[in-house]
Amino acid sequence: MILRQRAAHDHCHCSPIFGQITPLALLHTREAITITCLFIHLGFYCLGDRIAGLWDTTAMFDPLDWRSLQVTADTAFDLARTGRADAEFAISMLGTKAQKQVPTATALHFGQWLDWPEWLRDGTSLTDPGPLPAKVSMADDLIIIGNIIDNADYFALVERMLTSPRPVIGTTGALSLLHAPDLGLALASLVRAMAAQNPFVLIHIEERGDVVDVAFLPPWPMGPLFRFTASAGLAVIYRAVESLHCNDLGAMVIETHLHDFPAAQPMLARYDCRVIPSTGGDCLRFPRAWLDTPNPHHDAMLWAVAQTKLSALENETGEPDDVAAVRAFIVQMLMCEHRVPRLKQAAAHLNQSGRTIVRQLARHDVSFHALVEQERKARAILLIADQSVSLAQAARLLGFSDMSSFGRSFRSWFGDTPGNLRKRWANHAAVATPPGFRAHS
Image (cartoon, rainbow, N blue to C red; front, side, top):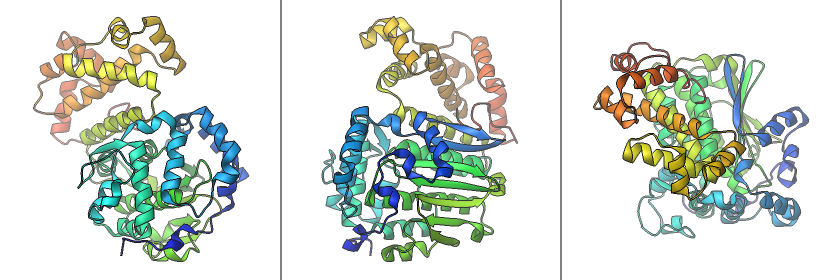
């Protein structure tokens, strides 16, 4: 049964990190420098020619909320608290960012499996019955997760994720997994998508010698919200590895704080690999050589489209409000008027001076011109991928006055002409992924 979880689910014997306050205390000394980097900047880095990544969620939190956390954590956190209580605290930590829109993704699967119960929407702004909309606010998404934790057997849901005919992930993640060149790039994209949609969990992918770790860590002391999110995240990563490297799964290792938790045993038994106790967060480990496993279904065009959508998702969920407002104006001008927006126009639209916009963007290490180029580049990939749009139409829709200007810009973005790239994609020829789409565009 998935409905009506046992009350014992809320009495997990969690690791000592859940009682700590300082972010560095979440990990052992070996990993302290890594987490320090995580709390400094949102980004990723390369080790050798392989992808390793750290996605920071602290930019999503208001400074006042962090001070409040440090003052009240000892008394505010009870590991037996409800999922809703965990979710509501996470919303308070996100501040105004909790109103940003995110894809419902796995919640759509959970809702369907549970037959869309009335309690699923309790406490949210959603009023219509039946299936959830494609996007909801982060706040509503968190409340939905909390409701599932309190009213359903969430371990049974994760168990179903492990036995479902296909990985239970959102559209952007599915595109990346299906069409990435290899397992390493597929996992890097999945982690980016998960981090963008779940800023209340720290997600870490790292190469260490001859192994790779994908770890899930709580940014503050957490209870059932972390248990559910980390368990579901591990299931997603496991199924992704399984889908592209189906041999020797026994070489994987799952580290989880749920190892000795009775209610989690049926779920953990679904893993065809070793499951061992963890004293920190939850982690999946596998041989580094697996990163090079090629994807037989790699499609360069769809991979580029997936990376474009992934970058858009990261912008929508993680970008500062002042940058997001400028980007939204640029997108509106390109999509509705098919013109390259000017700084003067953005200033008039946002009721600010051009100098103010320049200063605001500079604080976030970006310029107006860079935002325009990012959006034109992203839209160019989508237009070239659409065979129903002629190259002349693509140039016009991107605000170019002539084909030669379009061709020069396109070549500078992707290293080839739009016609050549479309032709190779249409012929399904072996083609290198366009520059800027290998890892993080």
